[in-house]
Length: 335
Image 1 (cartoon, helix red, strand yellow):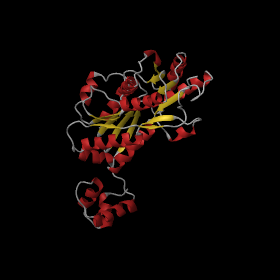
Image 2 (cartoon, one colour):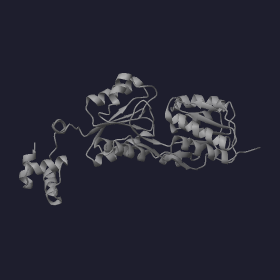
Image 3 (tube, helix red, strand yellow):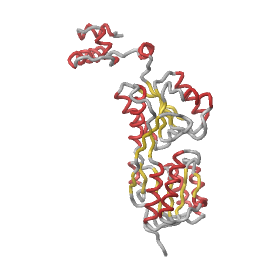
Image 4 (spheres, one colour):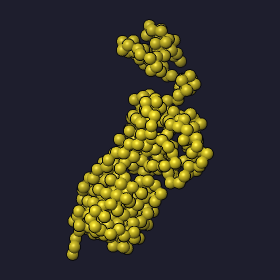
């Protein structure tokens, strides 16, 4: 196995220069850096990350914890994280909490024991235990909240504008003449659900339409609960439905088919989240698009800034959503 001494000999530079290139700890001229990098490739050198971590007190790894790996929203988010951290020589350890508090705590403690340099956390429903919360609030390692707010954790956050997304999706339906607009929400305690519902209510108020709580049902951000909630909602005769994530849209479309109803002829639908295959649906889905990749990329960027002590005060970044109008929404049929 090649060592840094072998690299130095082949590149005709000192061991200190090799170390500076590998660890990016001090300036090395482009000419010397190129020689060292060529020697590394030629010898197939792989650094001992454990030894480097002991020496620098860094592991060059980040823990990333998401609530549901099966949710189509998260792969692009994780890709954004991975692409950003790769630029700084980091890798990620990915965990999936399955929306379970005990599993979330297990992964968070695992990340702490592995001495990761930072943690990206998308919070699942419920509260972190007081003991673990105390550890995380020390910000060693630093934590950034992604997609979900959690007021008990005093740290950086990167979020999409959930209220704005709820507003533009509902407003589009109101502009088409719909007034009896159903909504399938996610878990009520989550900040995303609270924000999207607030946007829905703001749009209704702007169009002087009374809020009807019977038209709002809980689909828990998953397919099966949304299918069940959708069947109940259809009994209340909405002319349009705003479904606040893509997984729930799949469940609601199943309920619609079971009742032999079609979109947009019988019911107009706006779905939260947008994907490249939204055009492949028949008819293509009108969607509120979240900037998934940008959310992950920005979260990683802010976390790396925190790790390198480039900022001290908590940063709270909110990214805008956009409305993609396709064929599942139509002007209300007044007949």
